[in-house]
Length: 215
Image (cartoon, rainbow, N blue to C red; front, side):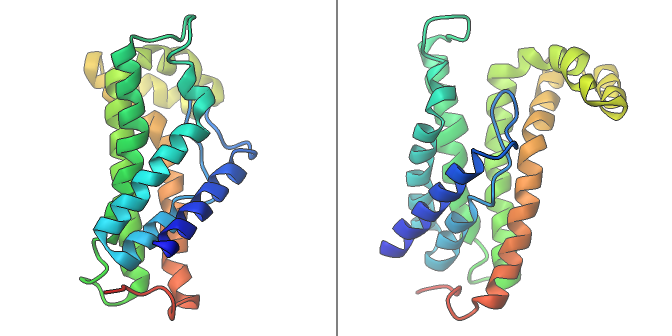
């Protein structure tokens, strides 16, 4: 319990430090300094049960850290949403998404070498979080897809413009909404997954004595 609490605290510190870096997307989501890696380690050390518990606590902390974004859904004004919709967004984008990182310990016993076990576990855990964001984005923000590909994304250069034109030509309706959600959330989640996986592979090489499954 003490170790998990320390790892949760470390994840929180990394998330807070990452907030001062210019790596945040304009409508939510950011690349962090591998802030979820300590939660991945907790799941690897103590198993899925402790991993899910640690990830759940971290999800609640993330909800409070992101209070400025979350509160906009509930305050009067053009950003205000129907109460049930705002609550579901909080549930999917924070509680469910971050809690799923607790599945990062799936390979703790199946793969004896800690480096690939931790690396593969981090990919699974963070991809599950990514999938939760895709579902939430497609359901609640899919209506922004046309605006994103027609007006916003092309502003980032010629390549972005060509990609947007391709997306609009190949997707429409709800399909475009799902594709938009996958692309938008992938802008920060894919680099996050890659960075975390690399560090998860390297870390046990230096801390093999400490990073090993605990029965």
